[in-house]
Image (cartoon, rainbow, N blue to C red; front, side, top):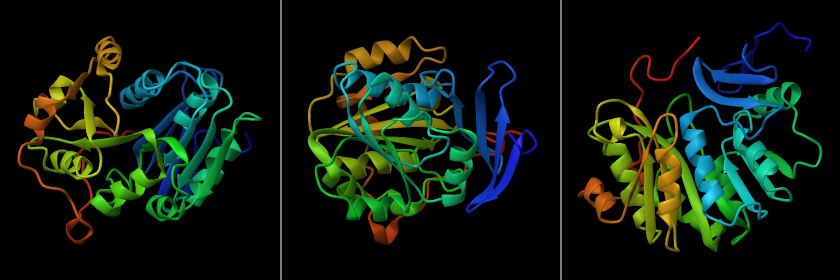
Length: 281
């Protein structure tokens, strides 16, 4: 590697840093403006370090039969952790990655190259604009992990955005999103209400301490038109080093309460994390 380690570079939306993991020879942490964005192990792409990434991986593993190739659309690129995971666990999958920060994509591909024949295509573009221009019924899964800094951009939180994501999904497709919030969960509850306008089935994965309002943290939203078999997902998330719970059905409706859907005219970004919630180094 020609640049000094860690690699620090100004990208389109901040300052990116790639830092090696001293415990894993080919593993790297990507941060942007100090906020952790991705962790990837080039030797072991099935290793998911971040808890939210593990939960997304559990959904990927359980919603369709293991090993079956999928057409996956990733909104938000980071270090391409989940695309690498899908390529390793479901060979033959076709994946599109949409990342608004072109310079960040270039940094990642330069220093953490994708394996040959990965089936991963990169698109430097805005996530919603790309969705709205994509052909319908082209994806088995849409995975949204888009943060401007540490906040989900406002235009990716609305009913119109949810409809754009639903349009590109096949009838039995599944939408996943990495979100973050804390009590009283105004953002998270509004996102559930927003996606309930478009999809029949919803589920939410989060640590009990987050759901009880004890701290700010990540939550994974799952949305689909088909029934979700949450039992195997619940077993997996409960067995993690940091166990999480899957909320579904009546319990999720209770959590959502009287929250209303978000529309373009009243959309706001997700809340700013409290100091120290995610920032490192």
